[in-house]
Image 1 (tube, helix red, strand yellow):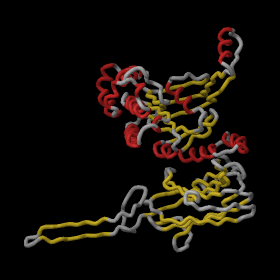
Image 2: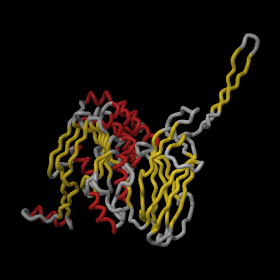
Image 3: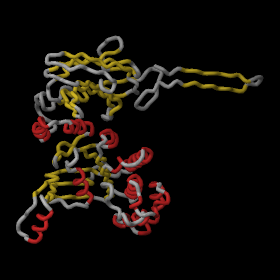
Image 4: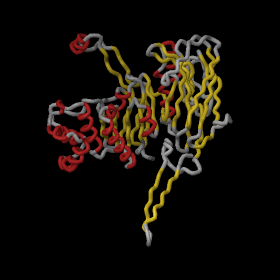
Length: 444
């Protein structure tokens, strides 16, 4: 991990955009005058990735994610800056890139293998392994134009991982394909991680980023906003998804601030930390003023035994009219991956319109059916305006829970399914068969 796999220094990428096709022709025929509008897809990106790291890249559509990956892969040249890549790169970019549609699958395997620096003999030695992983049957000898999107990704991924890459780049490709193949791919990613392969991937699935990445970075309008642990980046990213036009300028100003502000920002618009790991934002038209966590006896505590009942009580002060209010709770594990999400809308609970000055008290009661470990609870109060989600007050990772092991249950994992195990054992005896039945209820 001490060596650098990828180094980007002041990388920017500018594209030309023409108002009409004729303007492009005029520029060619009459050089000396630019007739294009400049569009900067990336601006001053600095990034260092150590060998063996898995890094996730998130951001809204048009934020520059794919452009950044293409520059690292070498399929695009930056307008300014320096790119240093140490090792063989295998890239699985947007659907349709990399394969010649008129070639058969077999021909494309050899074609791509040669482009990635393998000899014909090396490709022949690995072809059966590639074909087996892709599992597309006789279609391997059919033109790629006859493939479905799932078949295309199967073959493209099989090639990408079997050319012994030092760096693997994946751009949203794994969102295509059936669940069985996706599981197969992610098991392979785990194997590559254990081998020390550097992996970069773009995904809109926040849980994948949290589950597989050592770190993540957020891009917004071509600029790097934050690079940190996945959960912190995803929390920041979520805010960009729900910023309305009214808050957009304020959001952009905030995103350009350092992620380690010395002083918290005002709550009415900007994020602040109220607990050591909390990330909070909203428009301030309502506020989650108090959160109380209790056990089944009504005692305040943040430590529970696995499968013990927990009650979370919220007090929300409404500052403005809220037409369609919704209150939500999310339970995450220590890596920030969502374990359980619920809200009043999901559970068919209709909260009426709220007026200024209303004090809303709401409780979530449930059993913590999870195995021992550290968990985080997030709460949110939002308004629904048609298909638009308007955050009033979102408090991510505001509560840190400790869940301890039940005295009689040593089970492991994430969820505790409270299994009951029955054992029926028959043992021979010198004079007769004796039947010993052991039944044990492992319910804590």
